[in-house]
Figure (tube, rainbow, N blue to C red):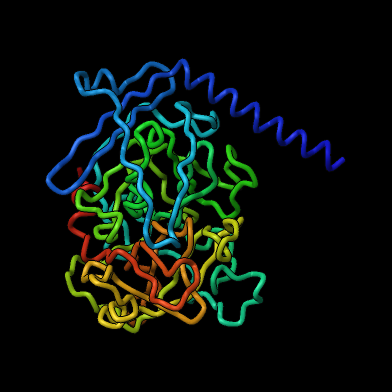
Length: 381
């Protein structure tokens, strides 16, 4: 019986791949890439049916491949996955166009858009210190299903969740530049976001228990992102169709713009993701979470002793004994209850790099407050 089920699973995967290849041969990819003064913008059209992108953007050059590079901090390396130009989930098929009009950048406890509070989540930090070893993701435990309504997973057609992200408006996802910058435009056209998801699929080509799926139509990442030094590791994705906020899916709060490196020092914070659960292991099947404490940048620079240090004032660091992020965790949020008495979760960091999944050095995040003005620009535009 087990052998029959195994053969059936392999046949299913083979059939899905065959359909992908067929559609790849008959459906052209229509997209464009350009630069602004502070960002690289990649747009991919909806590929179901006649191309609406071509009529809106006639005259732009055909797709060109993006660079492919390896993160030198080996805890966060991703293997490129093959992607094919079609939408594999008819039940979740997106609309053929999207609006750039945005009225929300989640800064307070209430969204002006749909009267949904930002930063909804557990009332307390994850209790992970005494978790059984078998349940740990480098010091974490399994989250309560759907307890973090702003957390999303990034997935391509033929991959499992390979990065995290967070909802910041009805059509925008905040993630790391390292999650998207080396994808080809073809691959970006096959990138999508899983919402209200706890358990990811057992095999590629499936969506696990995700209750919503959204296509990625635009990727914007910082023009000065550097894969070697991991500076400017921030990106904003545009998804379609827009999210209808509810008790199960809502945006995270964002801190006000600030260049102060140590404004959250000493705060306990939560991190979460579907990343590798042990060095050289496989990705987690369920969303994992852990509690860390924000550390001073000077201490973080000392911990990451190098010449030059990869840590600068655009980073925010956190640490806790036995806890670290690992492959497939970056892009995910680090959140804290930044004001005394507040129950709202504010995203203070975007997971960028750790110490090769082994712990021992502070975890490094892109500082959301530092990049807040940049983020606002590409939420509104």
